[in-house]
Image (cartoon, rainbow, N blue to C red):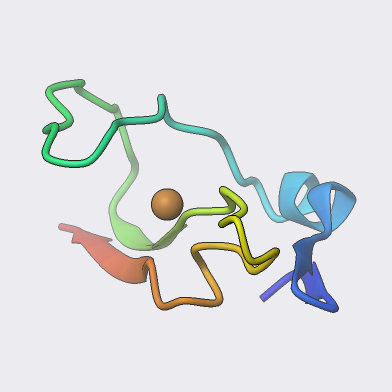
Length: 67
Ligand SMILES: [Cu+2]
C-alpha cells in the first residue's frame, strides 16, 4: 500500500491508477455508478481522524471484485 508513516503517498497512488470517489458521511450510501474493468480493486479511506491516524490505519479498507 502506498503509505509512508501512515500518510498516503499521493504520487504512488496516482502512478498505480488510483482515483477518488466522492466522500460519504456516516450512515449514507453511495448511489453512484462507476464503469470499471473486470479485476480486483482496493478501496480505502484516507480521511484523517482527530488522533492523526487515517481511517485506512483504523481498518477502513476493503476489496472489490468486478467480474
Ligand atoms: Cu473514512
